[in-house]
Image (cartoon, rainbow, N blue to C red):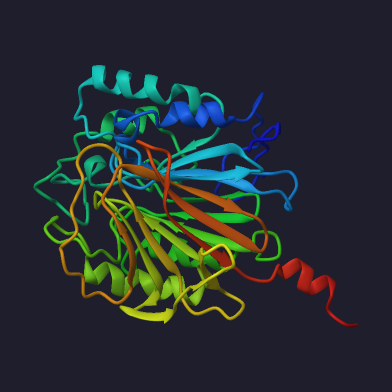
Length: 361
């Protein structure tokens, strides 16, 4: 699945400087990443992104969307892992450095070879006197000092941990759900400006990433879905035609229809291979995926789910894998125990650059 290709990162306003790597990961490296529940148990707020010097090539990303145990996605070039990212909280380990050493040793085969991108969650901030939006009983910022020391992201500043990167055909926007996100906040203004500046001819896809989800069928987690957060930030996603949203926090996997304000604006249809396919030839709304099925513990879904926007639910350890070309994005949720694909969907739309090339004079 993986052709040999050095990773090159484009320079951009909110990304790191250009970086190259000796070799991309191959299939054996991906197997080493999730050999059992221990690795799948790492769910930090991470975002994996794959870059390519050729926009026509397929990108593979691994993304983790939870607290320091992986719940993420892979963006690949051909079949190479070109970048890894987490969208959760740091390993749920507390401050014990021996646990961090163990965790960092586990991810070393990957993190030493590809960009390893993260974003914070409740275990990195939610304690008194930090100005956090939330102060929740299940965490107290116990991972913050170690997290900030080990994972330096191309953020605005140390206590403004939001940023964006471009990899291949994808523009990633990474926010902090733990910092102020109201309409008058600095983070909100930054998100609006960054999303407004995306060149869709260069990066046709926008993937938005944070920690606390906007949609979840699970009940019981403190401040699981914050309706104030949804009311504030969700309109930005629609306004700027975000294609896909990854969140973590809830310990399972769930996928929605193209949804806005709890209403399905578009449902997928089966393609010739039986894969759910969202046709974005006419944009309707983003697809949301909660990917926080790392290894800490799993949250079960209720027996009866009445949410019409919830199309797929899996309570099993795993991670998401994303393959993106300029006109097609395939997302697969993979079991970390069997490596079986437990859910998959595709988003398709015309390549904007091709439309411009074929436009009659």
